[in-house]
Each structure stands twice: as C-alpha cells, then as structure tokens.
Image: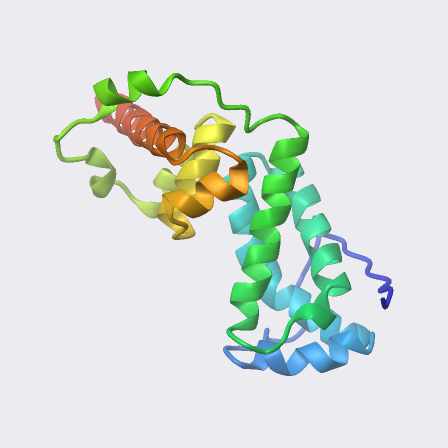
Length: 199
C-alpha cells in the first residue's frame, strides 16, 4: 500500500492552470499514483468545485462539507491504485465522495430513521409539484435546509440517480422507508417553496 502525503487547503484553493477536461482526468492518474504534486494539484483543481457542491448537498453546511471534502480527497489519493480505468474517473471519484459524506452522516447519527411506514400512505399526493417552477440555486438552498436523513435520501435518489434498492442497501434501511423519506422530502420542499412564494 502506498502512502500519499496530501496537503489540502480548502478554504483558499485556487486553480493555477486550466483544469483538465473530459478524459484528461484519466491521464493525470498515473502521475498522481507516482506522487507528482503538480498532477495531484491539477486533479484537485478539476474535481474540488464539483465535489464541494456534492458535499454541500449532503451535509448542508460549509464547514462540515469542507471537512468531508478533505477526507474524500485523502481517500481518493490513497485509493488511486484501485481505479481500474473502466468507466469515467469522475464517476469513480464521485462514488468516493458520496460514500465519505454518508460515512460522516452515519458517524454523527444523522441517518437514524425511525418513522413508521404506515404513515407513508398519507403522504402521497397526485398534485403537480411546485419544485418544477424554482431555480437551481434556490432549490439547492432549500435542499440544504431539509433534515439530514431526508436530504441524504433526496440527494441519492434525485440527484445522484441511486435506486431505492441501492439507497436501502447503502444506508441499511428497507426500501419502503427510503420511499417514505423521499416523499416527505418532496412534500417539505413543496411547503418551503409555497412559503417563499407568499413572501
């Protein structure tokens, strides 16, 4: 196992070069594996903004998201040897950051879910959702305001594209609970949007 010394200064990061595009990330991997600091910096510069947005979606506050971002990069650089080259590097990296955020939420007991599934039937509605009428930035702010368990399931299902089965397996829940929490998150978002519209 190779050990990497990675120093990340998240609060003041700046890109010194244009970040690599598309398949160029994969081209940085061999140099990063060898400990090339410039390649590591370029990889960091390319991924940090996207992965920070992902961490913010899951965790809701910037200081915690920055901590998880740093943990994610430490994991990414220490596990570069496990990237086989199959599939996109960014997709592989995204999985690492999602898992790092989920591990943090588990450690802080933010994912304790204890709702009775029988309550879920009353949550379903056939109405059109007002969520479709809101801008991206405002929607991300509202998602960040959701309780952490609902926010996590909403992010995994709606934004990351996980199935309910995958979410249930990842979080150690049953599928009915993930469906219930997703529906609650959607309804809460609708309520928050309606509240904003009244202002």
